[in-house]
Image (cartoon, rainbow, N blue to C red):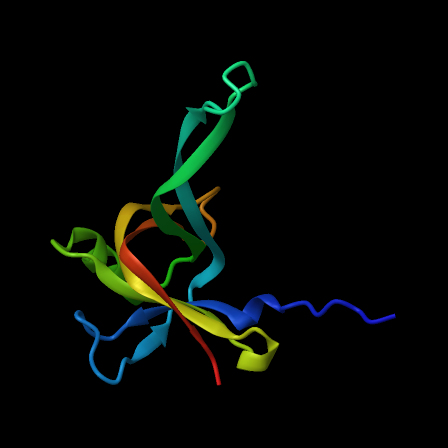
Length: 151
């Protein structure tokens, strides 16, 4: 019996561009403090009820078209003051900032990167019972998301 491969969490990471706009060649740095990462891609559909013109008494069916595609990131972890400053800088910027999600495997094993610009829509710093300071950031994709297979 063949087993299904699994991906260790350390191979699924968030990277931040070293420049905006992205330099050529692109250089991304690992966001080391982001130990929790959620990457969501969504499609918004618009539905219509469609009658069968050849059979007017037949029950109509639903048809849908893609209205838009969107994506977002939610990250959290232990606060690194310098990393938090970079994220706060991106939050306060007047333009979206380039980030990258990487599934760090060989391309033949499903390795890929997703790159695009994001707006940081929510940035929260917190502590609990005077413990370690944590952060949570929600990022909304702006424009297209580019997926590239790794070599």
